[in-house]
Amino acid sequence: MSDIFDRLPVLSEPTRARLLRVLAQEELGVGELARVVQLPQSTVSRHLKVLLTDGWVQRRKEGTTSLFRIEEGLPDGADVLWPAVRAAADARFAEDDHRLAAVLAARSGEGATFFGRNAERWEEVRTELFGAAYALPTFAALLPPDWTVLDLGTGTGSTAAELATGVERVIGVDREQAMLEAAAARCEDLDNVDLIRANLDDLPLPDDCIDAALCMLVLHHVVDVGAVLCEACRVLKPGGRLVVLDMVEHDRAEYRQSMGHEHLGFSRDAIEGSLADAGFTDIRWRRLPADVAAQGPGLFVVQGVCAGA
Image (tube, rainbow, N blue to C red; front, top):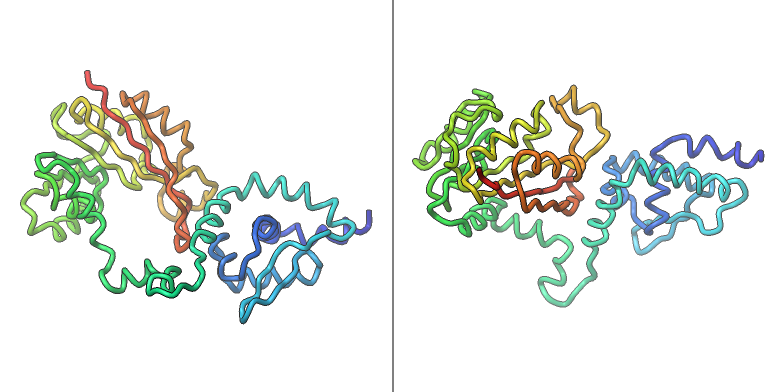
């Protein structure tokens, strides 16, 4: 039993258990590990050194890159301790699996063509050439040109401005005057964008006047989510669609103080239930692929159709 007690200090640090959990699934470099667990490379390296010294991981060189994986055949003590710690880590750090999948998907071998040689950094190459502002206007062009679209929590108006290129009218609503002033400056040359200051649960709009509504990274700031969804359903035409983008349920409680979040994301059951209670049908939920460059929790998109009166 002394071997177990000798090894307890290493795994008493949750970050090391988290790294081990990932390395039990895949051999990774320091940079890849850092993207998966959303920590600085220096922090990851420091904890890897402890794990390496204590015999928990092994290192392999591939060219100039060091790759790490969990030690095969853990020594006495570690082999007994690890299953219990792994079970606890699985429950606490399941979010890492989505970023791990994204990191592995980004791996690409060298090819003979331009695209083969640049596959790993193709998104970066394309952004360098063309910027990143072309995607939303392209998608907006798919919308019916006679639609009126409601942007709930429009903020600085970036989405409203892009949608305005493809539809007849965009209505942006926000409760913060400073946000609306920034949105007005952004949209000053767009005569089909109307900006309104109002609470999202009390929209100054008539019933059945909106073809589609967006609520992007807003609901976690709202106290009464159900009231906002009911109000969105009221102003949507029967058959109109609401699309919500927000964070999956997470445990970053500091966001309540640092960024004014009322909710720590939403579970699938909770958001689907709220939409159904508000009068939406044909509800479809999808978790978005992890962006390895992002530091925040994972995201989902859910849509529902207003059933009407």
